[in-house]
Image (cartoon, rainbow, N blue to C red; front, side, top):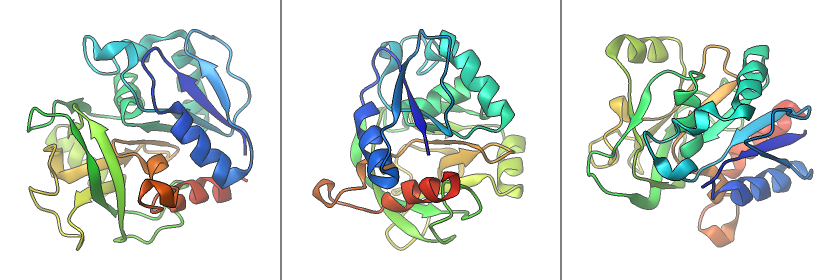
Length: 229
């Protein structure tokens, strides 16, 4: 499996996801600069976390118009898996690959802590190693992670099984304390209709080594390695 990681000015989690992918696949991911217009053949495209362009205008708005994104969108439409994590989630929504938008956390504060997520579906290349309803613990690090979409969009996402993860308590229950950033219906990650594009705010790549405090993210990257082998 060959992965390609897209780098923008202000990306800061590219090495984290690089290491997680290398551990899971045994293959060195490519790193592609955002101003490049050519994208090598890849089985997976990853847009990592960070603060692209300093989060000016709206988070991800400027990065969504970088030259490489034309090719990323074309590959996604052709079926290539595209993963956007944190700032990457913001970028893929701004690029129109996923519906909705990421707003400022309801606390108006930057959140940097471990959270619990409930896996809502195992029917994707990203979650096939998990069971629906399983609770995992991974970190978040964001100021603008409050997912918002209109009710019709939210109903469609839920009705079509496109909600991948929700914020929850350790027992799997959804409550306001667990959903600290205020995301609509506690949504932490969503899929597109083809299920090849996933955006999520938490960082599974930072829960793949026991030294980081959790290995609950290993199933995420093992799912990809298995599906795309």
